[in-house]
Length: 243
Image (cartoon, rainbow, N blue to C red):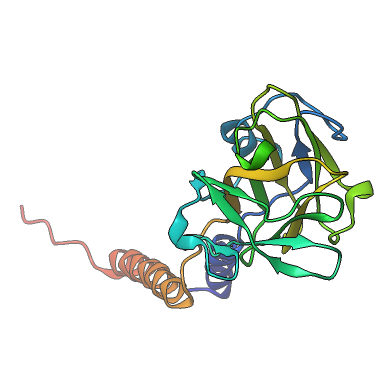
C-alpha cells in the first residue's frame, strides 16, 4: 500500500469529521425585521438558508415540572434555560406558566426573558405572544424584541409586533456563530411576554474518535487485502495445459 493511498484515506476520514454548520445569519418575524418575510413556521425556518446540515429538536412545549421554585424554567430535553428579569442587572424574577405558555413574572420597560442556550446552538425559534390581563390569550397588542446583547438591547434587536386580536408570532434565527444567550424584551409597558413553544438547532452528531479509528482501520485493511490479492494473481503461474 502506497503513501498516497494512506493519505487519501486520511483525507476521506477528515471529511466525515467536519460538523455541519450555518453559513449566514437569517432571521424573520412579522414586523420590523431587517429581512421581513411575513408569517413563517418552524418548517420554513428549518429550510431557511444556512440551516442545511443542522439537527433540530422539533417544537418543545412547556410543562410545569420544568419550572423551579425560584422561577427558572429548564428544558430537560435540550438543557435550554429560561429566566425572567426586571432591570438590566437583576435576573431570577419569577417566570410563571399559564397553561402550556411560559410567561413573565413582571412586565414593563427592561423586563423580559433571558434564554441560556445549550452549547453549539446555531439556530433558535419560538412562538411569541402577549399575556394580557394575566392570562396568555395571545390576543393583546404588544411590541417586543429578540436580541443577542444584553437585557437593554432593544434598540439593536429584531422587533416583533403581536397584533391586537391576532395570534402569537413566529420568530426564528440561524447564525454562523454559536448562540449562547438570547433576550426577549418589551419596549414599553406592554403585557407580559408569553412563549408558546420553542426549538433549537445545532450541528448533527458526529461519530466518536473510536468510531473513526474503527472505520479507518477497516478502510486501510480493505485496500491492503485488495492490493495483496492483485499481486497474488499476477505472480501465480498458469496451470499447465495437457494435450
